[in-house]
Image 1 (spheres, rainbow, N blue to C red):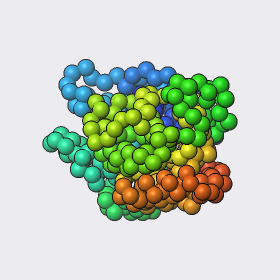
Image 2: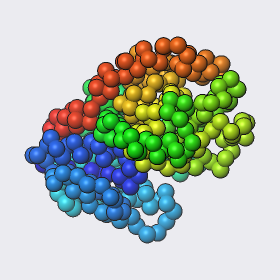
Image 3: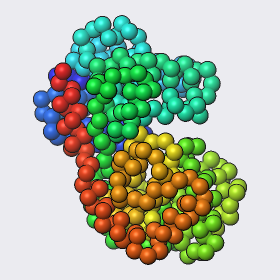
Image 4: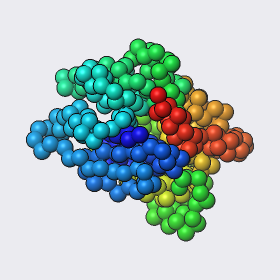
Length: 369
């Protein structure tokens, strides 16, 4: 069977969907020798897969705004390519399956992964008329797919409720961390990354993730400022790219923040493995891959108390409400007595719960209709 895949986010390999696409199809290529996967991207990518997974560049049209070109590529260019190439099935790695009902009259089976319902639930992602129209159409189109994959039971319940989809149609296949986070950290790499940022092993807190409003990074920074008043030898490391031109820091003194900018996965694994605590206070997630990256590296974990974090991390984390006092108390508890050691013992079990191979096997079985 030839399966066409919209793999657009391979062009952004460090995003959640980029990691999902790369790791899932690497595993599918290893375990599924019967099917052929053709991954379509709008530009060349530096990603390598097993022989039965090939990457095909199908360029965007050259006119129009970036949003218009993206939508045309998703809705016209890619579906037309799948039809012209005689695909047996179409797999969309994020909600971009065709809006037109005519597509579903043909025999090509359609699968879509819905990672979360955030664009449909959070108005911050629907600013402007075109954005509202786009997300309205993607929500309607999801219902027309033959099967929907998602990444947690929490997301499954949200999809059923928000999109009005029968739960029997939704299949949960958990994400995982990449292999680099499962291997022992190279001591020389660790030494260099700590030296680079002036850090000491076990003497810094770490945040890894995006800087969308829902991630609550300003709240983390504010709470950490209170913590730092008593613990001036333990800075907060914010890993990732530009933080909105520094506006994030208007409310606090910057002397306790270390900004890394972009990091390779190898360097990021080194920070996970040597931090005193990993903190993520997001208010909305579908899965949250950095939590499992941290677990695989043995980082003590503090998380916002939302359903998906409870589902994913179980009893291997401390959960906090989003009050500044509660966050400070949790950090002190984790770094204080033996709470961190007790939870760290549970991280190994947590990290073993998830695997890209299991994810791929679930999806492979579902592709056979």
